[in-house]
Image (cartoon, rainbow, N blue to C red; front, side):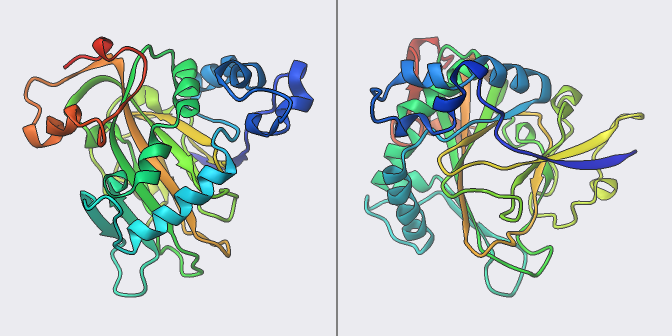
Length: 305
């Protein structure tokens, strides 16, 4: 098995709109903010090709700075145990360490924050996600908040190589993750690492999410003979998205920047998937809850129940 690594940035804009596309679409004061503008200034076809071919894609910023600022404050409040809804998140996790916490992972943070609820349902995210993936309807079924504190102590704060699909056996068919950067993710700020094309391997089974050793030779994944392992790191602007397929292999290393790295991993199902007949009730009971599991795009009638 061979390994190599390269860095990925947001794809260059379409030549016809290079000047306009050099800025996030919401910064153009002389254009109305809306779906049509976004699709004119983002090369959706190129993003769709990359998503189909590589199993992931990275978009320019689609969330405006004022909402990002509010969401960042809300994320830190949730991490500190605060709630402005009177409700609690579903789960709190951290890295396996007795030292200062460097990795914060909170399940369903929008359950206890009105701002995060507004962000999770922000229309421009889902208009773009639907255009890239070809989905006719989208429903959020889970959200995870990740905060990585700065550290020089490798490998503290790593997220091990894994696929999202094996952690969601209740779904058959098309689910994907929208990874929303609340803060800019540079090469030193724990960018996502992807193995392009690995979605074609199909499900490889559950792995240890908190495994700190990111050496591909020690993952224990049942990779087929002759599979060529290659990695890219995905720099994502604040307010930008990284979309990835349920079977995409991905991981992330420590945050070596000077600032905390904050993101939401929003898990989405499309009209192209259905519930497993043997799905555990605890995994699906919340789907009727418009707060925890909002339908964010399209006709809800297209989503299998």
